[in-house]
Image 1 (cartoon, rainbow, N blue to C red):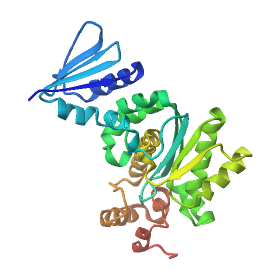
Image 2 (image 1 turned 180 degrees about the vertical axis):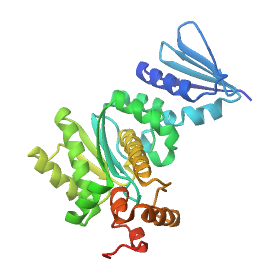
Image 3 (image 1 turned 120 degrees about the vertical axis):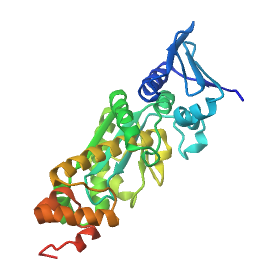
Image 4 (image 1 turned 180 degrees about the horizontal axis):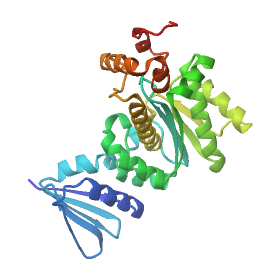
Length: 301
């Protein structure tokens, strides 16, 4: 049974969607010309036409599957109930990656966007990074960083371990990174609202922002699962990609395969890496205060 879906799309979102389709559709996709259309393509048993008027029409028996793969986040973004915070003012969102990973860096990313760019984020496929594959996020992050004002803070394990010795609290380290990235963007976009994926006491970031800025931010919201907001979702994608890049650098330094997370497979990788380079190598590739370190033969436990 043939299905038809109609969307409203702005020029920037149309361009972002076209870039994504050209990168992810199979090689036999048929791109063709239609009067008064930006582009048209037949693929996956579906026919998509993006008109210059701002209308996006999807038809064919494969329309539902096509929409689920390429337009799901665009659909979701049109439903304001998906996020408890409305995207109705200039917003800076931040999120982190690597907090629960023994190997690799701790990363915080912040992204600035305006309400008129909502559909553009949706067309890119932006969503909580935990719902997306790393392969999908690499080109998405590149597009986000080209299109939006971003700040990224990457704390590689060697620096992380040094900070841990002073702080002994990962939430304090995280708050430092969030506050620094948020404040840098806020200085360029001073009327923005701030949204942060909550990870600890709300005063941790608020206090640091006040110290950096010399004043309290106009509006700071910290909520669990803030990635439902499109700007925080974009930040989560950027943070995840920079984490993966740092993880791969750690893997290259170790001379062996590593594993993300902190479970049994990570223990096996840690044992192998320790045999290769001992404590000195582990300090460069791992967050040493994790319990995984307790199962390694460090001299000074």
